Length: 323
Length: 84
Image (cartoon, rainbow over all chains, first blue to last red):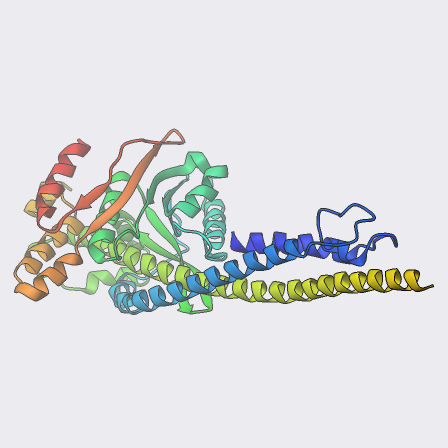
């Protein structure tokens, strides 16, 4: 939003500066968007001064937002890195098979509630739509579960009928595992699925966020895939203690895996959101600074032109009196 | 094959493994001593707004879950009966 405002300000200045004006108008009238009527001798620098003040305020605000995003990032980053240890054992045991072919796919798209964070929400939505297209087919069904306002706004436009659940206001309290597990529980209870595909932005560093997809299979599909061999086929070589059957254990594991993977995904997406916001606000402040420089030059030119005009008038008046 | 071994009691009551482990975690957190206890209980706050979509329209049902630490068990049971 701040970027759009800055761009609008820039366009207002770029246009009159580029176009050439007729000779009769004073050069300083190039500045005002509201062209001063011909013959008017003095130009008010007020317009330029107002623009400079508003651009300076925008710059202060975006700088402050960058600081806030940096401090929030520091707070969640350790959490996100620690949570990676939750799902890694699951991937080691059950594998992550994005190419599994199932009838019912549910795409869980994770996005932010607030804006001004660069392009991460659009990339998540783009990837979700691509996955939707990939997994579509005869007798197959793909649904969306949306976390966050921004993805909801984008997906409502063309995929309304495929949305199953939408969840917002996730970051009101600091993120913790209990909240995400209750959310995962809700999703599991309300949605039928064969495979859950979680789309989020993985946090690599403050400037790089990679859109990622994690796949969690339902226990029945795990059984089916186990028969076809591969990593899942080795599950039978494990010894099961206690009185539970393999099916029950698989069910518990599948639920817990979903909860862990979702927890990590939400944390990583939150980190990416703060990082993207930092860089967006940083480039905003830089643009505002450049715009301020251009405005200052224009302001000085206007001021000098009006002073010159006054001098010319005085001198020509004086010389008219003499001679 | 029908269930031969007894399904664990919590699965028979309709809970998922996630709910079961959360209740156990809550019990463990309540066993802590004082300064650590309040710190740990802040990690239990849950707040989000979920809305189910039917026929391309979000339901207006306000399923906002606000769990306060000790009320977890009560809330969990209440929400299960709500969904029926």
